[in-house]
Figure 1 (tube, rainbow, N blue to C red):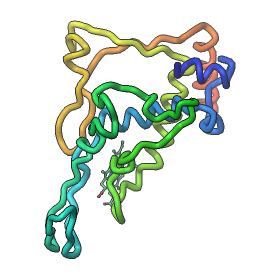
Figure 2: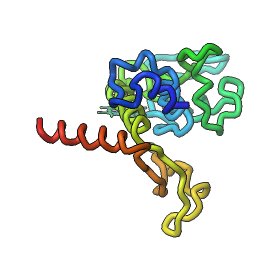
Figure 3: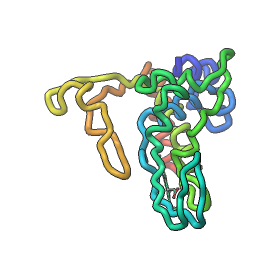
Length: 191
Ligand code: HEM
């Protein structure tokens, strides 16, 4: 579906660009679902309350350490049904337009110390996914080095989580797609 959406805009003749973003809602949804499905900072960053507070009946004194359970918010079945399934469509309306999801901004923390890198993340995710999928097909692969993919497709643990090593296949979709990649690389190295 992602590739069909891109092809409808580029005609398979060029790489997608940032100016195509508003007409690629499914790619937008893929980016958001990736941030939700594999949470990079599952417990955000610790903060402290700067004054006494009451939250849902609980008294929280000034100076209390607060750790946001971002993973739980983004895996709440009441908000994101069947949360373990990668399903970009949860970020689309019935007529295929992009819709943001509750709690997703929590991925980057909040308040004065919210992640300043979130704009880089947003743009890099979009352009990388759109460009790669426009010219390549990415496939699953089991191998003797890392074993069955299912066993390795989880994230590591820690304050910052990332996928465990895994194998995959990345192949050009066509001869034309391979030519587009070569000419983009040549143009970049000429600059
Ligand atoms: C998916 C990628 C990323 C995620 C999920 C992420 C998440 C976070 C979170 C949760 C915080 C703590 C915010 C808080 O205190 O509430 C943070 C802080 C920060 N992030 Fe990111 N981040 C990402 C990428 C980046 C990138 C690419 C950069 C820089 C290019 C960056 C720079 C920073 C900096 C400098 C802070 C500290 C801000 C401060 O304490 O004032 N992050 N990030």
